[in-house]
Image (cartoon, rainbow, N blue to C red; front, side, top):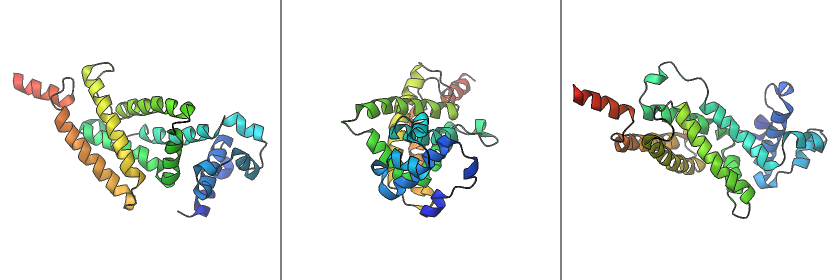
Length: 217
């Protein structure tokens, strides 16, 4: 995608101020890198007073949070017909792929955002990031409509496994130059298939309940 295509977003006149600031920051990040973005420059380019930008974002990390929210929204978007009848691993793959695809237009910048957040001397960003990771996994489980209730052994096992899978998939995605992120999607589907076999006998899962019912018959 060219810089012009990124910058000239259709319908920009109808964007909220918050969206305009975020998009301008992303545009500059594609040129200078995420750490090279200055909100003062964003304000100047949008012909806004700094106070107007501050009213929307307390700092550049808050702009990154707004960008990641696009991933959450894509993950939680309306699902295809028949989604509830898909196997759990297929539902999980669909939802995480939606998160990744929503951010793929600025993948390099997204990775830079994550690295900046995780920088050890910045506990004000990496400590909240740990909570955001947990929240993302929880939303992922909700979006995929997994049945295990929060706090059960099954749910705890799913959260641990999905957290590891999320981070592993993110690592692959960060360097994926394949068409349509095919390598990332293939990695995710393979790991989920393997995980489904491992989780089959953990109490509380859809398959374990079906198998138990079949055994009783």
